[in-house]
Image (cartoon, rainbow, N blue to C red; front, side, top):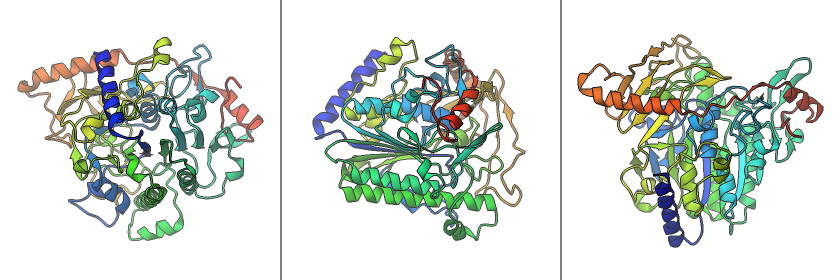
Length: 520
C-alpha cells in the first residue's frame, strides 16, 4: 500500500513538472496560537470590529479555504510534524523543555525531531530550492544538526524555544548565572540584534530582504514562523491604541497582535508581487494549534469547543488556507472540507517539486516513515475527495508527563478516549468581564475506555456525544479499535532530562545566548 502511494505521488509529480516550466516558489506561514475566531473570514456571520485581518481575509478569498485542516494541540509537535512529514505520534509528542538530552540515544535522545529524519527543506534543497527559515523553530537545537542550517535551510534567523520576550528576546534563567537570550542568526547568536526592535518587525524585515535578494531563476522555499500570537502578549503601542475600545486588556492585546501580523502578511505578499514571483508562488497559511483559552492566552475559538492543549476541535482544527498564483483560477474562492493534516504538506511539496518523499535515511535508522499524503489534487480542485482516510490524535505530553487521552478522526466521525481538558465553549467575545484574563476554571471530560463519539460535520461544536446511541455502536467500535492500534504503535523514545550543559554552554560559549551544546 505504501509503495503504491509513493508511485502515485511520483506520477503526480511528473504530471506537474510536465505542465509547469519550473517548480513553484513555496511560502509557508505557520501562525502561533491563532484562535479560530481570531480571523475575519471565520467571523463573516458575526462580524466584529475587534477582528481586523483584511490581508488574511483577502488572501483566503482569492485562494482555497481549508475547512478541515488539523494540527496538534501544542507548538513543538506541530512544528516537528510539518518539517518531518510525520504525524506527531511518529516524530515528537513532547512539548516540554528544549534542553532535554539522553546521551544513550544519539538519534532520538533530544527534544524535537530525531537526527536521522530528513526534513522538508533537505528534500527541496536537493532539487535546487533556495531554503530559508525565519522566526520560531521549536524543533530541537541540542546539536548543530538539529538547528535549521543542519536541517537543510540555507539561512535562518529566529529563536529555538517555545517563546521569548518580544523586545529583549530573553527566555529562561540559569541558576547562579542569570537570564538567557534566544535569538540566532545562521551560525551563531545574533548578539548585535538583541533588543534592537520589536522582534516580529525584525522577522518581517528579514523576510522582505530574503524575497528582494532572491534569484528568481531558482525556486524559493520560505518557512516563516511568526512569534505572534504566542505569549507574552506584547505589541507596539501604536497598535494597542487602535483597540482602546476593548475593555479586556488580554483580549485587546491579542487582537492588536493579530492585526500587526496581518499587516506583516500584507507587506510580504506585496514584496512577492513586486519581485514578480507571486504568480508562480504557493502560499500556505496555517495555525500551529488552536488558540489558548487559559489565563493570559487571549485567544478565542468560538464556536468550537476547547482550545490549545486540548484534543477538542478548538485545539486541533486550525485556521488554514492556500493562496498565490499557483492556485488554479477555477479553485479560487472555494472551500475544501476534505481531511488534511499538517504533516501532509511534506508529501505535497515533494510532489510539486518532483522529488521522492520517501525518507531513506530514517528507514536505515529504524525510524517511522513519512505519514503525509499529497493533497494538491484535492486543494487545486482536481479531486473532490481527500487521499487521507483518518487522523490519529495523539495525547498531550510535556516533559514525559502524559496530560490527556487520545483519539481519531475518520470521515465525519471523531472519537476521544480518556480524559480531556478544556471541555467547554466560549462566546463571541472572549476573554471578557466574567473571565478577565481567560478562565482558569474549565471543566474536563473523561471519555473513558468506551470513548466519546461525535459527528464533527453535523455537530462541529461537539455538543452531542453519540457513544450511547446503539445505532452508532459499529462506528464507535471501529474508531476505538483504530485509535487503539495507532496508540500502541506510537514512537516513544526516551528523550532524557534537562541537560545542565545547555546553560553552561550558553554562558561560556555564546555570551548568555541559547545555542547547541552537544557534539561541539
